[in-house]
Length: 241
Image 1 (cartoon, one colour):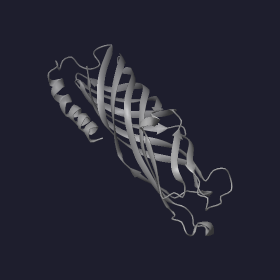
Image 2: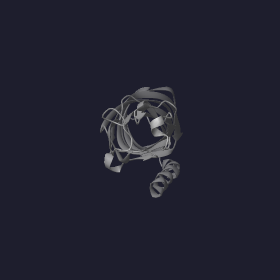
Image 3: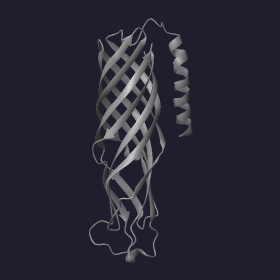
Image 4: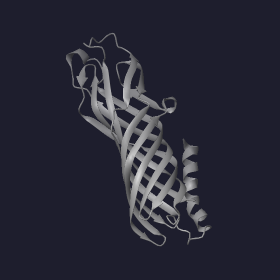
């Protein structure tokens, strides 16, 4: 992970010097089509629609934000002040939740503090519509939004479960997921940065496989039920070619 962060930081530091070597009169947005690259950091939050452990519904869930990162290639098709921008990015999203289960006479001898930590690798394909409400010379400021398709790379994702009574817990995620993206971008010549917020629309957790605790009798087929989606706030710095 450290070497990936170093590559992203190196790229972000190098972008301004690369742009200085280009003709500053050749602004982004002057062409019908622009291509570009960007990288940055994100912070994700799990939104839990349903979580039950050992037959007990959990509501007192605390989110802990963690920093992830991403790199992206994109194309922008310009229509005066309007534009369409498809992107393809590789993302690492990290987040963690903590919670405690309600006390039960059946669980007196067991711990009640739990944690779930996620590190999710995914490819993302957003299709964004944007509008430049400022477009003067080399300066642009735009708002944008649109749908995003996520493909979760299960092989390179990791979900850890702490202090659960069950063992060998493994989460299977739905491979495809849909979200909505909105944000704001500022461009100076060919350098730009943007802030965006992604809203997850669907549950990403398909099922949990685990070895049950035979010492605890819980009615029903599952001792753990977990439905979640996640929202992400991100910042990126990039360069138009």
